[in-house]
Image (cartoon, rainbow, N blue to C red; front, side, top):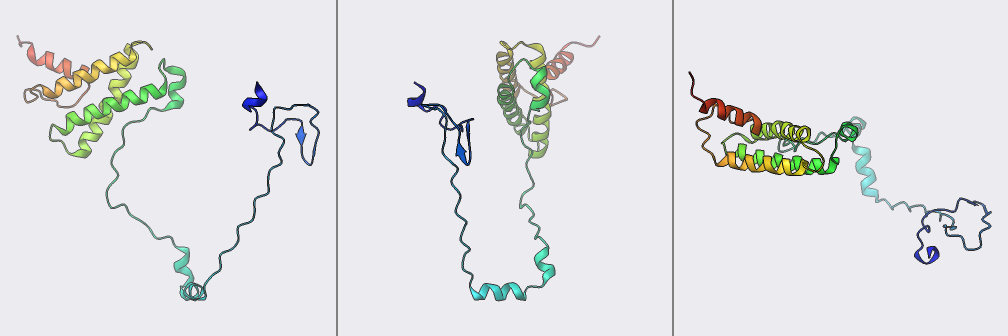
Length: 190
């Protein structure tokens, strides 16, 4: 079975040591080929015109690197989960968390851009709120309920976008903060 599938063909034989093979197995499963020496790259022929140009350039100009400035400012990227911190403290795989975090970020970004915020403000607020929202979901759920908890938060964010926000003072914040603000404004003051 193993010789026909060549499952160990990529692994060098532990008994095969160059310059001579000491492998005593009849049908060894491992690779016994010697590494092929790589041919040296041939130098490209240079034209006389390019050498003259290099000689005419002052030595100080060749040592400095030209600075390239971006034509557009860098846009804030979606938040990332620090894998080194979450490997021991999280009940959910970091890849799953990252995917759902990006979903939360995109929903918050749509919400805040619809509120006539600048792109930079919307990105920063979406980044902050999506990270906090994801952490709240992680703390309040188990491994089996985490995904559904995040999806229910996404639905709340979408409903929040359709509500009339003119009556509320704060336009940004997690769904929990927004619900608390909404309840505080709806209760009559005595």
